[in-house]
Image (cartoon, rainbow, N blue to C red; front, side, top):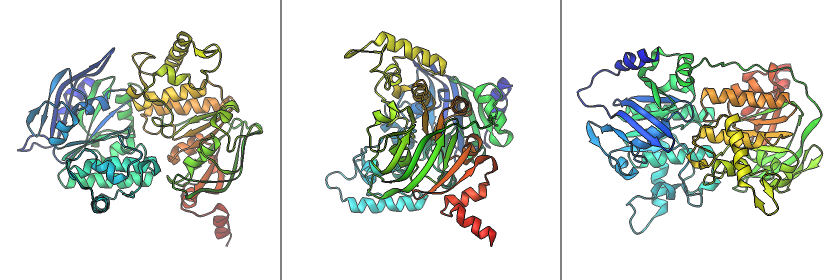
Length: 528
């Protein structure tokens, strides 16, 4: 089947044009030590199309696009841009040819403003920077493409979704004709995803061409014209018209097996309360109230999902529980007060944390897989000994986790920053779950992952639940919350609008609560 798709359907490209394609990548080979990342991959991007690049984490998608963006050089193969053969030695060369890449992992300076980050590296302005003037230019660009973010805000003050918009604005400001979106929706709320898709369609209508990397099959079928699928560095489909493909077809091409889209969950066997949050209030990084007298609890063996539009206090809730943000009120884990205590108190109380920012918070990118997996137990025997670390034991420990959680990497000495998003998430999960936690605080645990990895992580969470672990699941994927959760708490502007049983949850009702309508108010309206 795959051979037929590669050699027959790949001929069904967009209608012939008198001008050459925007991009032609032919027989691209990329090697790293111990890894063949791309094995004779072909990709053709036509004018004014959205071409999806699909594949599991570690399949070679970002590597292939990093070659096109001038960050990597291929071992062999040719690249043509608008019919001209090119050899990129740096991203500057790619930008000069009209290629811009919106990276999955942000390349922003936290202490600078949005405008300063967008202007960074440009020749204009040369000597004097009138920031107010450029703030206005950035604002006009935001209005044009519907990408809302305060140009004067510091990057560290922005949510993950807002930081992603800054990356998109950087590329647009440079006037790219060919745009590469590497998982652009992975950090966006559903409403923001819809807006971005509209923005992408507007771009191609104006003559731009887009390569769109995504793990979300529904997005690919919604927005793409054609799709190329990679599996372990090899193309299993090249330039297939998306109209003839189903989600199951795409999943099969990605992972080489049938994927179960339905999650089976055992009946709830809730135990005693593990987490008790009572009257908690906290501010965000801008000093604005983010949590307002919030209360909730979770029992052993229960998953409590938190639904809400991004920026309504979800991140701050996770941070106050894990000791990363001060608050007012009480937070107890198995009876131990952890509010306003250092993170080590939460760790010793049995709290595991899967943060939404897996690169900046969940891992140390410049450290190895080994060092990342022992961050919670490096003080303990047999890894920790007196004032030192037994690295031979640590590496063996990391190797076992690498095998158990199927982390794709040349070895445990590989730096975390060289891992794909999905494999980095597996490192974090391996570290947190191996500590046998009593409570898991999971924030967007499947965001940006492929269907196979999502299936695996969801099953891991359900295994922990069935083993008696309490789980706080914060996700912007309502479908995921309803599939995994036993109860769903809806948060709006730092307050809980209501908590409902997931089994009988009504999507419309949850949607109303996400916009500020309390469950009690809705009950009164129905009664009258």
